[in-house]
Image (cartoon, rainbow, N blue to C red):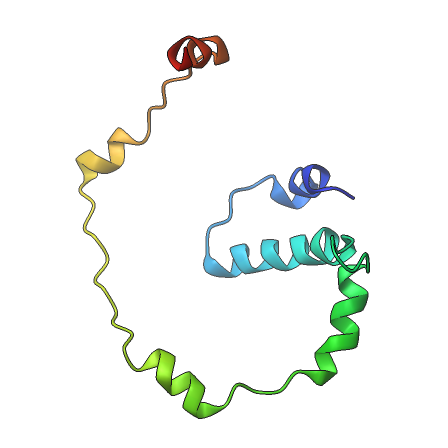
Length: 104
């Protein structure tokens, strides 16, 4: 199955509404697309390579985690007004030929 057919399957007929929906779609994409791919360098099927390597993985040492998480700051989410939100509801559709003319 390729990426196009996975994205157009029956479970994608409704828009995801929650983080859990996106997680489920991501898991499905991993199972149906990513793990079936052949690695460009090793030529191994990614899912088989992952199965072989997974038992060899070890937890990241706490000292390493502390080094990279100590300076993380949580930024506030931007406030988007209804006016700004409505601006994104209308999309102007352009022809490819319009883009080609602009590029010249």
